[in-house]
Length: 239
Image 1 (cartoon, rainbow, N blue to C red):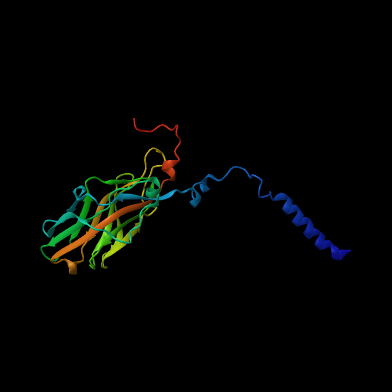
Image 2 (image 1 turned 90 degrees about the vertical axis):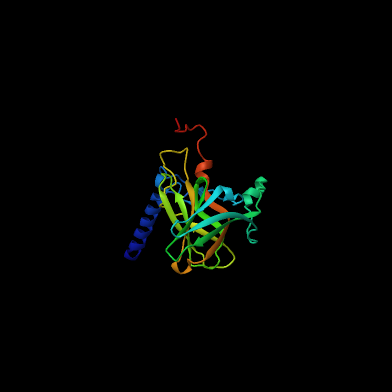
């Protein structure tokens, strides 16, 4: 009789533990609010066009006057590998895309210089931006391309895109870190960041003569879920 005593206790204990555990299809209290909104199922990622660089008059190029000067012009052409945005095709959007933005810089002498390309007004990016991309002809220089942003509160941000040490067209992109403020949870009627332009930080060894660089098809991959899922009866804080 003793040899059956331990198994009986084990079976009883397992049965008691199973009885205390709820079934998977049974609700267990209130959901944990800290876990809501962090899974990928609640994202609405979409690629949007910020600029096709069709109008050079909407941009300007700057350099320190002691080091040189830069000019800007629209040039016919574009990368052959560029793919259309699927959402725009589905919506029937067919905008002109025949030109690129050309920047020509003249160096007076070798120096740690920079070339800055700015839009006439900062470009707003809807939603919560994840990635910024554009096509660039780098001309195989060691210069470094950076993107200039403003966060939700207007603070200046610089993100390094990469070196321009390649020939021909190349699509370059940079991830927007989660640490950049893109919205204030107290205000639901506005969010997003703004693009203030680009900066090319010139390598000292390559600052001589004339430098050409071309840009096309500026895009953002953004999460539109917060924008598209606001309460219709919410009151905007704009008064």
